[in-house]
Length: 336
Image (tube, rainbow, N blue to C red; front, top):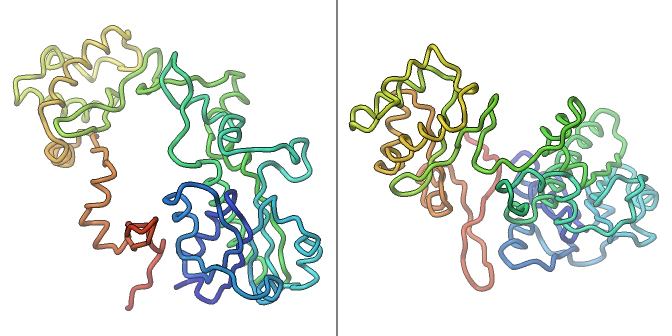
């Protein structure tokens, strides 16, 4: 695999652990001297593909290409200067809660507080209700992704001049980058985003995005895409369920300018029809006629997917005495 020649020492615990797991999935040999205190399934995801360190840690670092370390790796022999002196070609990636050298550097942080400070929790959830967190430890995962990118970028830089590299990744900054829309909105118009729930705000009104089908959920919305709207209403008319939508001239209106009460009335018609069809049928109709609808996969659908199995996505791992499916390598070499 593409990183099979790379040796990584992972000194992270919770924060940053996903960076090493990603490189392991790309073929690198990743030896971990850190461990998390999370539930077993989440820890397995971040440690999957890694080896447990044995022997002298400093000997491992002397022969490593990359070291990942978090805020807890602060022993004198693990400072950037000490690591560089031991291994001048080493790529040293520190994954920290906040920006190095900035005001919040020494503040304690959890995934929850980083998510809140980044603004992501402001926009996740339904209007008028408390904010929600996304599943798992999202800020920690985002920081791990950025850490892996930093390591790969540093590998490329080292190939050009032969020198070791140092990089610092901020979990806070990683989460802010994922929340790309709200910082831009604040910068341009001075407005703070709000939770919109199951609404896509377009123009003066909002339209629903998630709907109940007969056997699960699908995503679709009333939007200013005339061919899509005509195709959807035509399928509804075949079942005698188009109602007043059959009389709408989609070429002469803008959905984004329609009053909210009218959209609610139209959506009630769509809701009733979607509930009569299963996801497979709706997907087939959408692909055939251009309805712009997509089925929403549940966990069981993903695990049972013939397509993902044929791609060799899954590998097995032991978690608390159980064999579970885990995502395998991100890339696989295919013989010509």
